[in-house]
Length: 288
Ligand code: 5RP
Image 1 (cartoon, rainbow, N blue to C red):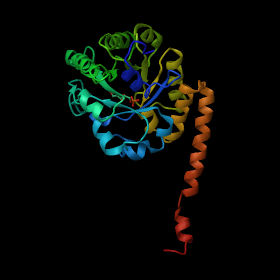
Image 2 (image 1 turned 45 degrees about the horizontal axis):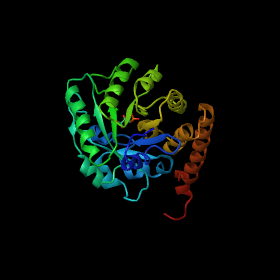
Image 3 (image 1 turned 180 degrees about the vertical axis):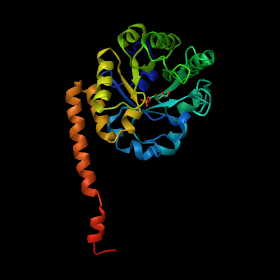
Image 4 (image 1 turned 90 degrees about the vertical axis):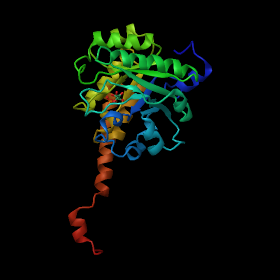
């Protein structure tokens, strides 16, 4: 993996993809088009207990400057395309929001650019990726190509479309591709000659579903996840992130990882109960 690269790029990629060839990326960049998102209202607080269990963060340049300490000690993939909000008719009218030089100034491990293949602004987004690959090359800065869908393409999270979009991203020079997990995912891996990480997508019903997604993606050839809402919108983010980490870095099966998550949830419930101050506690207290 990453054989034909310069030292600088390899070194940066090693902050994202660890020595076992796997990657746990925590995506917290949603605000770049969703604004304040449930679970990520206060990014610094939301990520505090999750950082020990992730290899890198994927986030927007403003949140890095405002919510992350410079010595936080993890890899960092900066969102470099954007320009829309969910209030727009669609979110594919993107341009580059962060030049490579600025990303290097922020000490990014990589930059992320979305392509919305087949959307109204498809060509523009493909050129965003192409331009960023060329710009980033000056600095040996890796590029993560994201096969985004948006509103018009929301039904395209299927193997034929995602294989096509992922292959395009690799052909244009993305060092890693981020796409969605779907039925037949192994075909996407087979047709994409660069490592793939999968997004989590909207919140799934159960922890078992989240762990199954991670497990299946890894079994079918993904190198890891770049997951957001299924971690930080959960009731027990620090528990599920440890389960995800165990599937990806420790080869846990779904059942083992689920047992780990459930025991961590139980410990956390107990801790919360211990610290819960009830109305009765206040009534009983002599100090008012
Ligand atoms: C948006 C993104 C997000 O980072 C991505 O969707 C991952 O987050 P989630 O797991 O919540 O889907 O790239 O384009």
